[in-house]
Length: 618
Ligand code: AGP
Image (cartoon, rainbow, N blue to C red; front, side):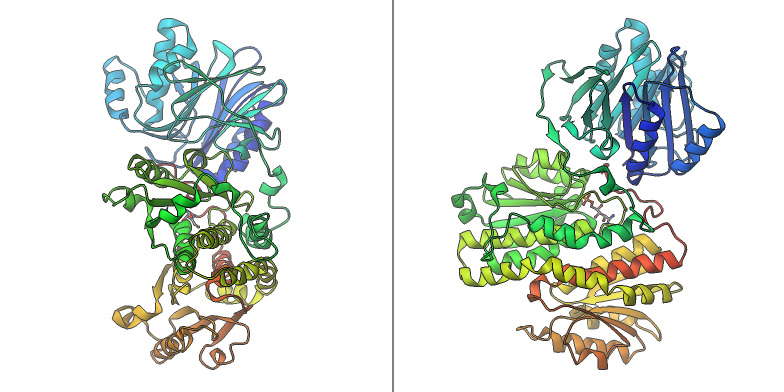
């Protein structure tokens, strides 16, 4: 959580910093702040609680000097309430010449603070971060060598951090350090950038370098040096950012979420591109690192992920198991890591993450790797820590997802999960190739079907807006529809702040049916009537059971399902497809429903309260 940006170069630093923070605001929006060093060598700082607009207003009222070096921060509060005082940057030292921003948590801050308090240092905030500012300033005052003062302090910090520092007495350099939190360098011509992710600087340069774990960056306008914490110079390969700055702007839409829902046909198409042959067979060059022998020897797949990404895993599990016959278990990363799971070299860990920076998921894969498992990432962000630390990566090409609520990343993750399932199955040979190719050919048709669903979202939007006063909404599904139900509920909780639960429809009579009372809205994901396991009649019976107790039912059903309309007040139809692929379609009306309900309540759909896009602390 928290977004950081740093700049040194000839452009207006304030414009670069504010532009970067605007693109990083999804990472946290409790407060924002910037520090710059003026050409006359003065450090100046402005910071303000609340969203970036408050900081912009503050700077209009108290302008900053033109500058060619600076740092900026947008905060998701951990230590200390979201106040002006706790906003970053924090100043360090008696002379307050050093400015620091921090993303992460310094776990041993209490002990370090006690050391500083004993020396008489006074603190201006309740944050853990301010400790680091004073420590670095203190070391610099002793030695006059900023990079070594910086290095001597960062090695003392425990926990997760990306830290950026500038100092009035060294006005040409930004120092940065990274441990367990993201940091990317943007390489320009006579200018250089730092950011939590490439969004911070993509409008200025597409050339980027990911900083490794426990590394320090010494950034000047004309040079970039990367060292390990123990002082060895390292070089990293440069990569080219493959999306345009305009992809991370609203482009006329009312919200990023609305735009990202509409982006889904492209997100699914781009994720399929180059991976499905015209005969429906799958090629996944990305996982060449896993030999056919490795794949044949696999005994188990464990998918680790959090939130919406974990529902993508739940959905992919149905396909991977059915086609490859490899047992799959899906685990929330934070639960997996701490329960002593059974893993060996024949276990494949599949980690799913849009950001590739979710700390719980990173901790899970690190643990699994220690135990000898191979890790395959399904990730949307180039250069992310997850991608770098995994043995192989299938990138979802959804483009930048800015709204906190995940939409297009999810449909791209499901698509990638199905591609993986078909690929593994083609090597394992448990299911005839013709059956796999039939599914592959159907997968190729999904982008067109997603477009069709999006063109028909008016009904879901109307129903969402009509339910603005609902106190609770329940979601039911069976089989692949069950994780879709859970995702529908999560969207509503995070966007509309109302109680919502997703249940397996078969579980209804084991407890949840007691929640049904007159007028209770229930959204039911109805399986295809063509489904060979006859789940359709079972779900129709479930609908009858809840309607008999007063539920108001909205069904998401397949076009041509003639029965369902007699049982539900409202039916939203989605196109026919292979039954296991249906979640790519059925989840979309639920996204639109939550967006419309939240909008009708007058809430901020892109930046819901208490949340941040990337959860980079455990
Ligand atoms: C979904 O709408 C959420 N914002 C959240 O559950 C998210 O999917 C989760 O935090 C995982 O993020 P990741 O994909 O970046 O790892």
